[in-house]
Length: 378
Image (cartoon, rainbow, N blue to C red; front, side, top):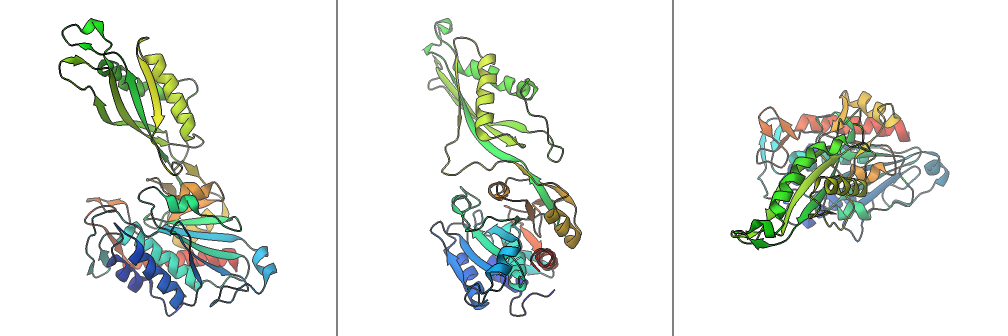
């Protein structure tokens, strides 16, 4: 690998996994900033906590000043993105040969190490490469939602554990609360009220036919059909009273081009038609400070997908989880890529106490991204 000799992605990863970032990312962000500055790269942390660095054609590596605007503008703008936060609790680092264990080792400090190695190795002859690392992907994605670029990207690589496959699509995730409204009465005289819990049962059953309505979206060739799953139920306030309200939460894994509002309004219309006339039905999207992570799909024959696939030797397939790639896919062709796996044949890996990544895969991922960047900006 032709990465800058002063930067070792595996050594960086070992330090990063030892650095807690489940409750507060400050220490991990400081490590990232110091690593970039030690490599002579100018770094900026914006108001949302994003860490940003740029390598541009004709730029002075130490100061980030562009001396050849024409070379930069003549080439593409490639963004490398991943995140530094992890889910709690912090799991201690261990090394067993090629295997590095610990919280964040594959989600997403392994991918970060690979992207960082490629970023530091590339010397753009045209265009620019931006490293944009967000602080809160595992929660509300405020960092990604606030990201802005003075030049829109032409291609985006999002670092997540994909086992070196190139993931060109992912389902989105919307969440809504369905509320059935009836009328209270004494349980000894149930006919005098309208039982919202019983009505909610009818609404739950009606979820199964939501995909059969006339205006339902067809499934995606890459992602398959959307899914709709009830996850929690709450209703009633007294054991001897006809309940006037019952609600349940649904998880929607969407496919393009469905938006959160299209899902909400479609579900509300469908469920109102299935409810008794004396039952009110409301469907409300969960309040978020940032947009929901919508589904995306980048054509498998796009230059970004084909170039990274050839460099990595992996397959082209969908990613199995929702990611911040959703935000970038609105701007440019976007793929999800990196070392590590979400799960293996023994069970969960990411977000689990047995989380691990292989050091050799981190190096292979770095080589693949570096080769892709070389193809695009050299």
